[in-house]
Image (cartoon, rainbow, N blue to C red; front, side, top):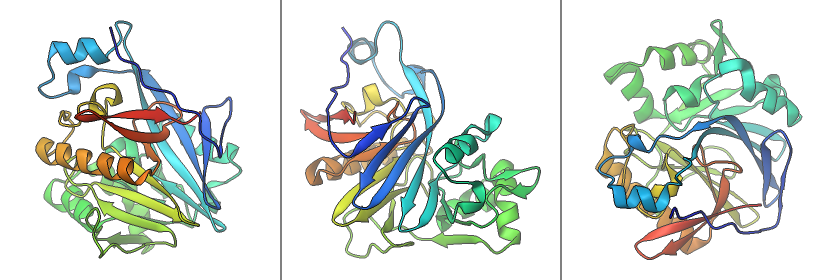
Length: 283
């Protein structure tokens, strides 16, 4: 029998019929923007056995989602990742949240895979003409110099031409050397999925939230078994180590999380459960 996720009811949030979900972080608001949902594929998991699959994956299958997040913070509109850009869905979701592309002040990129930067440009023009793009220097170097991703280079080109790319070096989880790149937003190194993969801690009025990016891809399995990585991970061992470390940090400090591949609402809390974790989606 498949094990389902535990559903928790927590305050300070609201959902709408179009698949967006809003969570308060102090006086900030973070909104889940669901770009797509499709049938999931547990075949991307590395070294998983049939016992684990039969325990956690329902016989009828499961869903895989692609999310971005919109943060409304002190009069600033900040987009965290942009989706693939297919059919302009993320742009429409932003507009439904009362924000135009011209009103986006900053775009934070967790890493340079196509489902995270695809809406940055269209026909060679910046989709967010007044925004700066923030990303890890290590990630930029890897995908534009060491292992060139032409799609990433093209997506960043309009912003590079306008001197609107801001690079940073994220600090280590739990380090005293962590520093904000924008008020209330701190990048944290989560290397493994990609060499510069970055998660973001958001804090306001003592409330915290973690955008965990692609820390996991098959939540049903990787929460209870964080040691299992995916074929998408450049360094599966490093990805497994940081996944456990971040989930432990979130659970011990009671910090809600949001993930790019956690199904709607994409936001919830984490608790330790035996040798792994359980996820409680917000409702």
